[in-house]
Length: 456
Image (cartoon, rainbow, N blue to C red; front, side, top):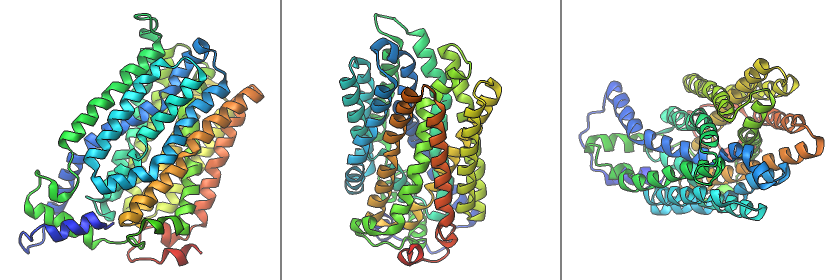
């Protein structure tokens, strides 16, 4: 993808010789870029996702401590995404204007402080307010990072970078589940605080530290990178300019009027129902399957996320090699839906239930990773900043809808089955809508496509 940053870099960086780099040299250069960018961004996203879903572990103690109903919990878990939705697009446009370093640092510091402040929740109102403010603080982080990576890496190589970054989601589950379970169990009533209060405090503060680190070490653009030689900068900027595939102009308004953007919103909204249906309720589902002890629940929750990490990497490699995004996205969503249904149908069989939850999580998160390859190819410049944020913000409404509906259905029916069946149905809808997209639009594009005609 090309954008104003990439084109500006290409124009601003003096030519450093006319000899084109060999393929081995280019591979080495992009490995260097990935090693410089991904570890810090990955760790930041791990903390972001952990701070977002650790309320699912806090629920195991909070509901009895504070006398909250399942509906109160579901609404509080979901109201985070209303704040996220309202401020997502403005946040991403600010990042595009002021640069990733300052804005991402601001996001991380404020959300870290607010996440720690969750320890002071004592009424439903305080729960709702802090969750809403947490969403406001974090708004723009995820789409901002996706946009930021397009400033450095061309479409032909972006799949691997995004897959590595998205691994933070399952890794947050692999690391965060056992950590959250251990904190809940080991710090319960230490210093007159409950385990869930210690969990919020301890898991929130690292985000503040990471925000300071980002402010000190991240670079906004290729031209600003003091760890690149002039020739390396020229190669990176030239490759970005050469692979300009987006068909939307520089106006952010275009992102609101292009039909494909809203179709992508629907697909990702449905996938999001699956992600948050699993993320917010997995500890409860595992406990209901027969796992006792908070630490054990945390350890078991790491299994599905570990499998998802492997699946995301393998499918991303295959998808990049074939250029076929549609088939893998559809297959992953269908598999996730079927496995989620089976996990409920046999939830009293611990081995089967955990196995089905593992396959479901792998399918859902693989579909999520495959999906985000699409808007990064289709959109460019301010339209990319706005369009990616629009898709992310609308999709994140699923984070409000899913926990609230699941919580309400649990209170109404006395069972978790109906909520998970609804979640499985949303994944089927995502797969069906994706199937209806023209293959040339979804899969690898070797030439620009008129997206307005393609989707009409």
